[in-house]
Length: 98
Image: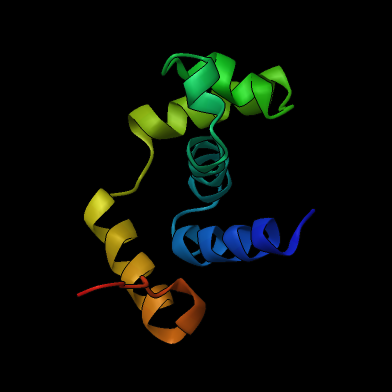
């Protein structure tokens, strides 16, 4: 795995870590599928995108269920992302010409 992939996984782990067990790993799989581009080739379909990652059928079902019924809120995930970004300078946006 490249260093960019590793640092992305570390960021995702930080974001989902406080979620309940089960929801955290399942949602990490979904977020990784989003960032890896698996949803592009599946035209937005969750099951094919997760299968493209190489997950087994049980992991795909758990991840899909976490999206529908998991104990998480997008505002909480965004807050965690901003906390990660504030402490890691490599995750700050670059600006050119203003």
